[in-house]
Length: 497
Image 1 (cartoon, rainbow, N blue to C red):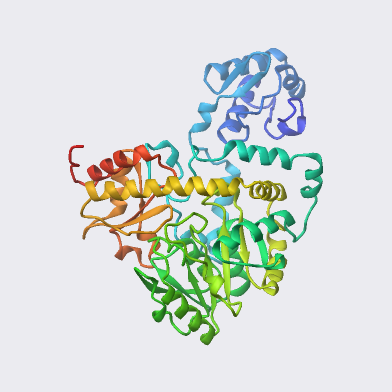
Image 2 (spheres, helix red, strand yellow):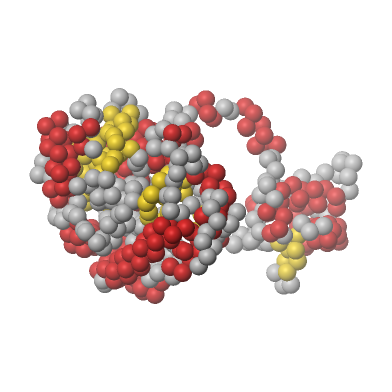
C-alpha cells in the first residue's frame, strides 16, 4: 500500500492557484473528483491526511477538512475510523471518463492504421467471463471449485515456499525449465498417451495457446498453408493467421478428420486426434495411419493438440505422436483441463533440435514460465495428487456426460448429439433454421450459459445450428434442470417430470 505522506504520489494531482476565481476548498475538491473519475486513485489507496495535504498545498488545515467532509457528503469519499479517507468503491463502478490527455492521444494516433496484424478483427473468445454467476453454466474449459484439490494444491505451494525450494526456483533460469517438472511430465503425463521422450525433447509453455503461438512464430510465414479440421479449434486458426499462414479447412466426420482430403500442398496439418475439437470424436486408427503416411510422403509437419487427452476415456487411444517414427509430429499438451486453466501450464514434445530453437525463441518472449508455479505443479505430480485428481474428474465427468445426453434426448429430442467416448463437452446440432447465437441470449436470460458453435467454423455464418455444452463446471444435479430451461428458451415446452 502506498505511504500516505509520499509527496511523489500526489504531486501531479493537485494544482492550487491563488489566481483562480475559485476558492481553495473548491479547487481541492475538483482535483480529487477529477482524479477519482479518471481512475488515478484506487479504492485501496488512502488519501493524504488533512494535516499532510494542508502542509503540502500551503493552506489552512481547516480548508482541507471542509473539502474532505463535503466529498464524503457527496459520496465520493468514505471516512474510515483511524485509517483515513478512501475513494467510495461505488463511484468506481461507473465507466471511467477519459482524461484530456487520453482524448488528445486517441485523436492523434490511429493505432489500427499502424498495426501489422489485425488482432482485434480475429475471432473473439467465447463470452463466458461471468459463467460462475449463472445457475446452469454449460461452459467448457473452466474448473469446478467443488472438485478442485484445494488442500493438496496448498500443500504443494507450501512445500514450494520452503527455504531450500525457493533457492531452486527464485533465480532467473533464462531459457531452462524446472528439471523436476520436466521429469514429471516425462514420467507421469506422457506415458499415459504412449509417448516416451527425453528431457531435451520437452519444453514448458504458458498453456497450449502459448505453445501454438511459439510454433507458428518459429515455423510459419506468409504463404504457409495449414490444413485444419472443419469445424476446428478457433484460437489455433487465429494464431496461424496471425503468423501469416493460410488455414485450409478439411472436413470432419464420425472418424475424425478426413485424411484423404488433406491437400498435398499444405506444409502443416493441425489435428486434435484424441478428442476432436469441438465434436469430441476420436480419430480412427485407419485415418491416423493415412495421415502419417501422407505426411511422410509429402514432407508435412503434423501439429497434434492433445485436446482433453489427460482424462480417463471409455476407449482410450494413444497419441498420434506415439505412432510417429520420423519425428514430424509435434505434440502440444496442457494441464488446463485437469488441474486448473488459470495456472497456464502446458508443454511441447518434439525433436531436441526443434526444442532448442523454441527455447531460444521463448527466451526473447518471456524467458520462462514462472518457476514457482512450475515447482508447485512438479510437486503436485510427484506426490500423486494429479493421478488422483484425474480419476476423480474422469468419474465425475463421465456421469455428467451421461446425464446430459439423457436430458437432451428427453427435452431436446430434435437436437442430435455426438456420442463421444470421453471428454468434457458434448457437441449438438439443432434443427434446420436454429440460430444458437439467439438461443444463447435467450438462455442467458434463464441463467443458462451455452456456447454457440459458429466460431468453430471457418465460415461460421453457414453453421448457426450448432452448439457446445461443457460439463466441467456444472454440478450433476443442475444438468437436467438446466436442459429444461434451455428447452424452454429454445421454444419447446418441456414435459412434466
